[in-house]
Amino acid sequence: MPSPLYRQYKTQVVPSLKAQFGYASVMQVPRVQKVVVNVGYGRHVKDKSFIDLIEKNLATITGQKPVHNAAKKSISNFKTRKGMNVGVSVLLRGDRMYDFLYRLIHLALPRVRDFRGLSPKAFDSKGNFSIGLKEVIAFPEISADLLEHIHGLEITIVTNAKTNDEGRALLKALGMPIQESGKTA
Image (cartoon, rainbow, N blue to C red; front, top):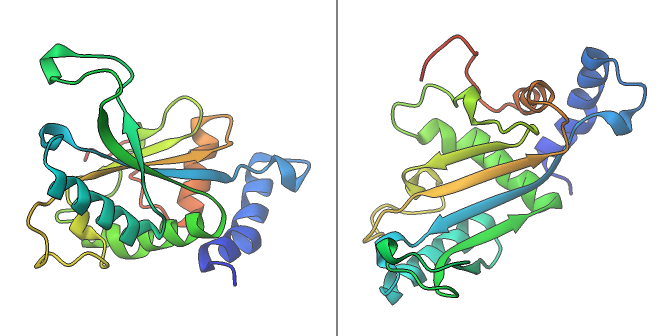
């Protein structure tokens, strides 16, 4: 059974974006291709219990086992060596992606303390959107009582939009609480 967000995309978002931007075909309408959820270990690289906690939290939030990311080059100031694990990430597509986005928009973001909307400056030049959450406990699946360390996570929403305006219109139509350009965060 498809996610409510996917049904909303097919029934409401596609026709409105097609009319708004004057697309000739529904295949031209931008769509979300994938969502990447990433957590870096930071200074806890050697703390096995912290790494296990991060893995467990990411698997709980996304429903998928995370992959370890290795450093691409050595940086002496950060005490990292080439090939050393420095973080974990999850790549979501399809139904899991839409389920995760639905829970992010409707459950996690409203629980963030002092939340006033997401910055419109978080778009890159290709219509992709990146969010950083300081506390993973914004997701209702994670119990704050059981956590010994609170960590953040980064979420990148990759779209096939050609411009930032198309990407912004797509995410706003899906319900993402992006601020208007004139307001400050």
